Image (cartoon, rainbow, N blue to C red; front, side, top):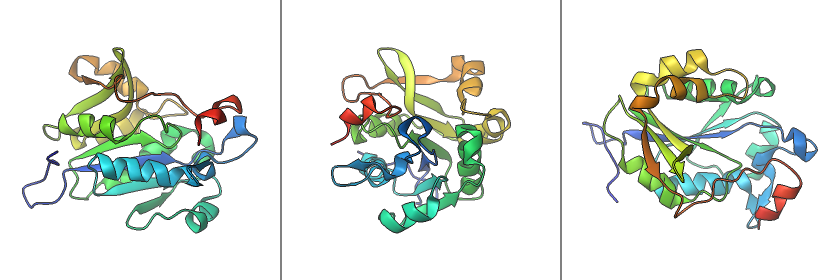
Length: 204
């Protein structure tokens, strides 16, 4: 796989992992700290982004962020604290995009920490569809939009202005639906979330 690069040779697309949630429906256990394959789930999610082709990875932390920093190996990542994480995922998306503003990245590939069924193959497919700072690309599962999602830098201000509560970029993507390129990933990934006690069965 060839990773898109900017004219100065740096990577054009940065991974942006949203990992701030407090796991309200999981008894207040932050999803970043759930154990998957013997390590914190946030480590697994970072590894997926890197193996999929994102050399630069920004991780937005919130609930028990100091414990996440202490327990998880996140070397080489840019760690972004979101003090407003309890207000919803939109605040984490805004914090992450703000951390990328001014960086060499021309796009952000956004992933969620609580989707371990989405692996590097899906990340790579979405990444390969990057075609410049106007890009809007989304993984799709049987034609339904899901994660990861790639936002070219041109769209960051508009996304940040509409990202509220737990909606994230949903409203922006809906309003720009004709411009969103869907990349089918249903054959290589499963887009379930770890939201409830029953969902913990997906973890290994």
